[in-house]
Image (spheres, protein in one colour):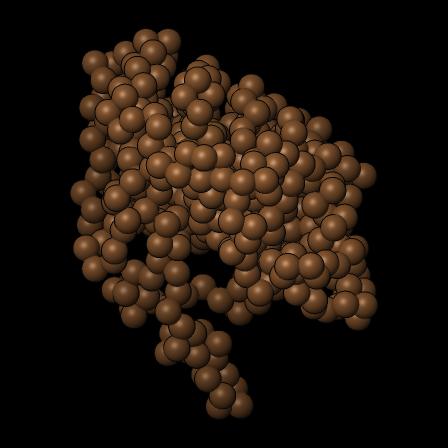
Length: 455
Ligand code: PLP
């Protein structure tokens, strides 16, 4: 309750909001942390406490908050053209210019763009597009897709069915199982028989080939993969894995869909990670988040000229998919401004530099008694907490280790994200090397305090 007797935002939120991924027990008991203001990498809560946001919103506030240049561009676009739909033959300047810019930045002949509202709707659309493309080419039987265990591809029906993180699946929800298959997550530490990297890669590729054989290549439309599995705990795959999986796809006429919702726009130092980091030119890229630096919701499916031509020539003439806010002029203008700032301020080079500092400082935390593994690349890092370093045994669920660590950080003015027994960080790309060292130091002290309580 505030001084004048009106309920606080915390009370209003607690009484009325169903949050994404709500955990009802703690929510009823504690409510939420209400963030009122943000500037650069910092957030302020309703009580005026300040936090360094190492979560980066949620893998998205790449340029930091409160930028006047972005606010001005957005305000200008609202005054000029706040909305115009993109259906059928309607277009607007920001969406046309943004599509051209994305085509210029994307690898290979990925010159075509379909705008969506977020990452989930981009993944949904890619799933439809893959099937539509094959049907248009005269292979309507290619309706199945293959994805990986432990992946996250969004929260729509199809996104949650293609994704498969254990904790996300609840019996009350429906998931499509028909025509969606999963192969092993490429996490080296979980390799069978403790295989080394090269042997594990061979094993994963052989498993993929066997799955294709089992389903029948002539029935498979696409393979979906995050270049680095993000919400699954920042799983960086073995070095040659994605390139070899892409080769198998090519040989079998299967489209390679790179879900770059997290990895695009600088998170690991490239516009797109697939080609620059892993040597793969996908057929389709899905992206969102950093595209607007989180200032406005926007997603995009970037796809090849080849797919466009096949759909245009052989399709049913109508690609009946899209959203009221596809190509939203204000969101597209925000994205154009974000890309412009990234170019002018050489953000990719900055990520190389600060990312190296952050990696080294965070990898040093692997020494802590409750840290089983530190994983990641540049500005996406995961701390995997364990009860027993030798066996990798995790703490029982009731210890709620990830949340304990994030609460300990929060008490010290740092936000890190708990995901099950892990803690994940994706700070704004604009943070400095000093920030990176301070984040790792604060996190290290929190891990030490929690370890002292538990072991
Ligand atoms: N794909 C990946 C790889 C993601 O990490 C996410 C969200 O975290 C999504 C898709 C879904 O994006 P959105 O939450 O914008 O719908």
